[in-house]
Length: 184
Ligand SMILES: [Zn+2]
Image (cartoon, rainbow, N blue to C red; front, side, top):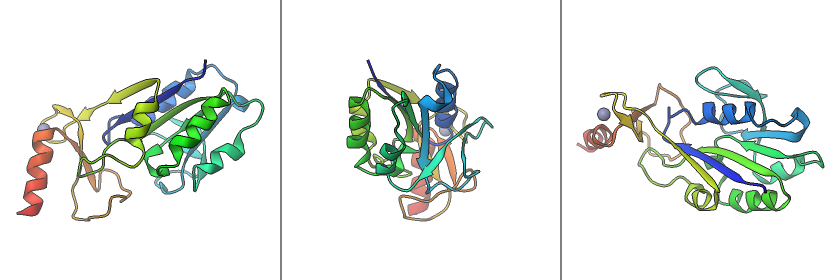
């Protein structure tokens, strides 16, 4: 039985680290595994998927989710997708097609943007997933459970690639306070 596992949470919640852990323990051979991530994220080395904790796995950067299907061979058993939120609404259908070919999917993504609004395909993917793994970070200010992504600079575009130079994980209270400070 093939399955779809979705890992999600705010920034700094360890999503990619979890994805790499599942990759390392999936038990399949290298030729049975495909790893992809969107090309939009150019923070790290081009042919690898890296976590902030220093783990990495070989992976391919692709421009659109349709490209995933072009990598599938007869040996493919499982596909790992990092930063799945950037692939847009079509990725749900593509994942469904992959599952129908008896290939498992493990994806990780940011489920909400810096305004705490649903990020692209994530609500659909949560509904589709057989297993949802929700992760949390630590609030940058109080060290309590961090569930929100706070953007520390003023910029209104939903996609703004950055790391701790532009973002913090925050608890709801400190996220809310930070957002209010921007509008005042
Ligand atoms: Zn806090």
